[in-house]
Image 1 (tube, rainbow, N blue to C red):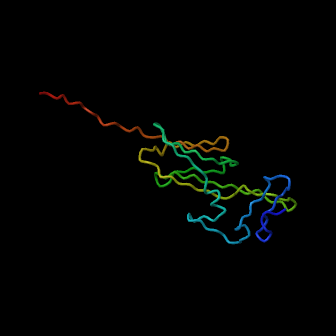
Image 2 (cartoon, helix red, strand yellow; image 1 turned 135 degrees about the horizontal axis):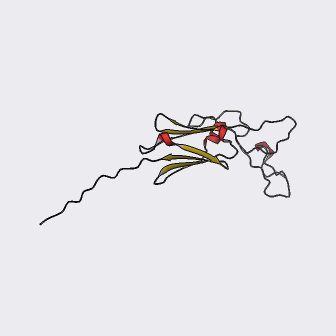
Length: 158
């Protein structure tokens, strides 16, 4: 039972009785071209390059959190370069394909990722700490105390 004509690829149900087993047709699936994204990465790298990273500022520090499921801490690199640029990079390797295996669906992506963040002037770049737990990388960049200007009240007479 086909919902999309065969000329458009494999848009067919893998199980006629399961309405949610419809494979979605991808019109670019069969093109052998390598797609280059605006960032200069190829499409495989861009899939992982879109690693989502949250950056929040607390009174004490700048905290970066990145979801990196399936990666080990040895596969991730955290660096401070050019003085104030925090760089988070790594690589997720694809699972090795065995000629005897039959793949029904491949949705997890592999490739390299690289994200850079320019840190503000109040960042203590010598005290950066990183930890990884349950696939979430947390990078903490402490902040320097902002010295409040010494304010001296002046008595008004008259």
